[in-house]
Amino acid sequence: MNNRANINSTVKNTVKPGWPDPVLFCCTLLLNGMGLVSINSVAQVAGSNAILVRQACGSALGIVLMIVLSQIDAGKITRYWKFFYAAAILSLLFVLFFGVSVGGAMRWIAVGGLTFQPSELAKILLILFYSEFIIILGEKYNRTLVFVLSTLLILPPFFLILKEPDLSTSIMIFLIFCVIIFVAGLDRKIIAAVTAAAIPALLIIIYTAVIGGFSFLGEYQRQRILAWLHPEDYATSTAYQTMNSMTAIGSGQLIGKGLHVEDADTLLGTGFISESQTDFIFAVIGEQLGFLGCCIMIFLISAVTIRCYMIASKSKSLHDRIIASGMAAWIGFQSYLNIGVTTGLLPNTGIPLPFVSYGLTSLICLYAGLGFVQSIYIKNQSADSDAEAR
Image (tube, rainbow, N blue to C red):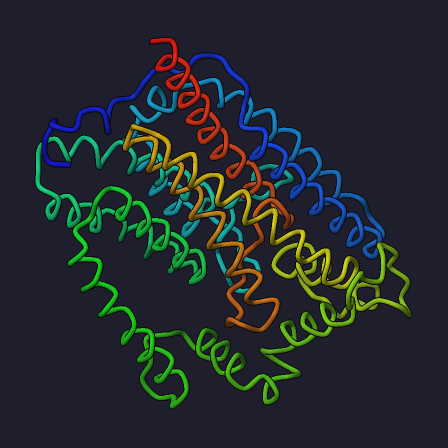
């Protein structure tokens, strides 16, 4: 990364018009479709189709955006990498001063009748930023210095999101960054050192949450960890959502209760699944479509994630590998964090399920990111065709 000897790993070829990857395209649409079906059920319970209409319009816009971006070389867009980083920081600062507070958290900006979440936009902006930043610095400096500078630049968005407060998205930003640095060729000794420090740090955080007194965490974060460790003691408070979610998933059994929402028959209909259209939509899927429906959804999520990694592995450009791997990390980690929360395997983090949960900012940004991945796929196919022709 500190010289041009392996120039083929960093060169950006021109994208020729082509067809998107059918596996990635179809799995994404099926995943989005399952989300719309579940949101429709939530809308029936609420007696209003507003959220369904908005999500459907967001899905249509996202699909069009993905197709358009698939025909554009990402390198033509990432040349504005400085602007992307500045936009991420400024939008996060804006939400802290002028944002809309919901449930004690300042995470949204009101735009007309809609709300916009800058932290979701920051994910794709930072992926695009680092795909160019690492290449440019790698031509001038050694890997250790690039790692140090990259780490310093991830800290402002990390702490700005943490300030909202939004610990789960801060963690996601950090996980995406770790994958990007790994793909960029970070020395394994540094990876081992960071891992060796991270595990004890995590244990210390959990320990301080359990014993009380001084803690690195806020009180609400501490309560969530305690509720995760001892849900029976917080069944009517902090662990209420998670326990009802697990009950709903279990009640679906093998094939689920179906898509009806009769009050006497479903937990969704009785209102016991709170945040059912966003953070806990997997519980809706578990209750209505059962174990088989959950397996199908996990399969689709895994297929999208793995396909992004496969596209990254076939690319000869480090720039493209960073983008595709960053998107894979975003979709994969965030999906399994969400599912871990709804099944009680992880503390409640309040993070949406990609392409499934209601939320226009997240949905459109995810589709935009996959548009760049599709562009990389088309570029790889074009390169393979040229190689065969020669």
